[in-house]
Length: 158
Image (tube, rainbow, N blue to C red):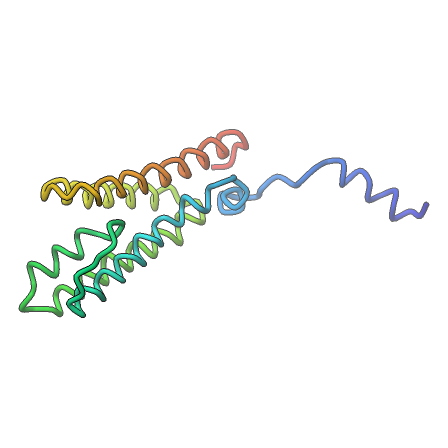
């Protein structure tokens, strides 16, 4: 045996290194990234809904935001205002997705709060299929957040 073989064995036996920060820990938590990516799905499908609305298509995705649909209904004569609201919400959810994947607690809290309010708009209009899909998305987002919080507690990473 060579000296390099002898020195490499103890490091391998020690197991994987402890994550240095929350972002690194988030990448290692099983199922976390998939849960955090729901924010991107929301943003993406909302953008498709906006494109469908602008092209007068009669389809939309139930996972998309009611806020953007409401903006287009309220500002039919001022499409610029509706598009500004679209950019705000769609861009906001894309940013939330990025920050959530990095383990930012605020991104989860803000995203869940806004998406819950969005679901309540669908409840107000008795549109139950989007409410069900919002609940499903919120479940997976919440599960990802809780798993990260448990991993943070277990590792002592703040």
